[in-house]
Length: 189
Image (cartoon, rainbow, N blue to C red; front, top):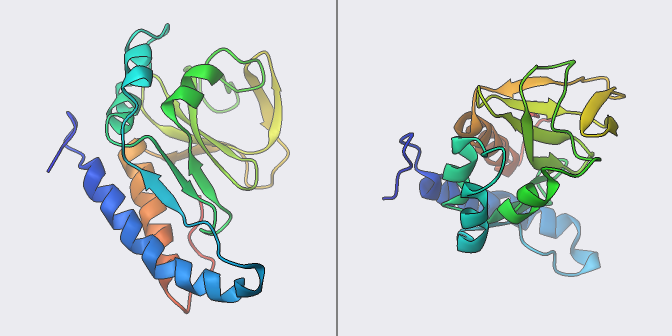
């Protein structure tokens, strides 16, 4: 069992997510069978050593919790889970650090620098705070020179998980609930 410095077993999370995917994907496939075989939802677990090396040299340095996550997985795609969720590759995260259209600051939510690492199918992004490690939800809204200018979404921006492991646990709970045939839309991020 491979544990991170923080004690989180990301490989166990990956395996649990794969079991949850196996629980909900057949139901979704049956619903959409007339369109052909759906691409499966995936967690790619081969870490990207080149991106990890670049990440260790990034300026400013990435939050340690992101490095821990990407030491165990490359990326994840849950296109068929609820509204769809994506954990972007570390290479994508590194590329986005200085792109003007990707938020690094969200003054409405926090004063700390943010690193976007995930998104959902509705255009919301999920970013981790550099100092706190808190995961913030940033609904669709304007971004100018990396500054998030607010939400046009009724849910609004804010902290949704105390850290990345908490975010991953919430995602797993959503996937497990979605596997239930009597699923009610009660768990969202």
